[in-house]
Image 1 (cartoon, rainbow, N blue to C red):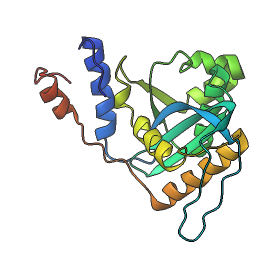
Image 2: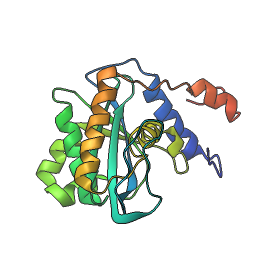
Image 3: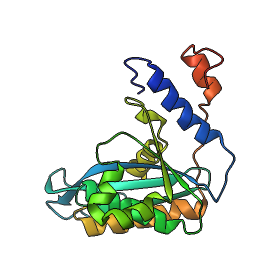
Image 4: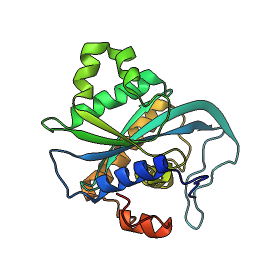
Length: 219
């Protein structure tokens, strides 16, 4: 659901910057990657499910055991049909920094990776500096350019669409620990990447001008 409490100049400017990135022609030297994270519960069966039998589906007991939570970082390059997952126990500054390090490693030889992300307090240069020190952090930052979605504009981040698909196709069952979660996510990621599943984004700057009744000269 779109949540826009007030259409400020700052909101419009950031929205248009994100949409301009999405409208660019695909360029493997400057990939546009959307990043977001999702907290998920780890659940274990209290009793082993009963296997499927002729005429009877697999039966799963309604009771389960909570085994904590985990954070799943999702990085998706919509126009290339690529996505990558990174599982951590939490989503601290260090976890975010390690995620960006992994992202840069995935794209050797690029001139710049445009990273679309929201304004979470961990999504900053400081997270990398605190984790890696200034020299290594700068090496990573030289490879990326951050594009923030506006406050209450996380719906502009296509990673949210990919996370919704991930929840339906992979997280809709009980996974008891981080190891199992990571294994299942990598299998899901591999299947979608093999099929080259893209995201068909249809909200343009022109659409935004019409929807929000913006002046035609805006961006």
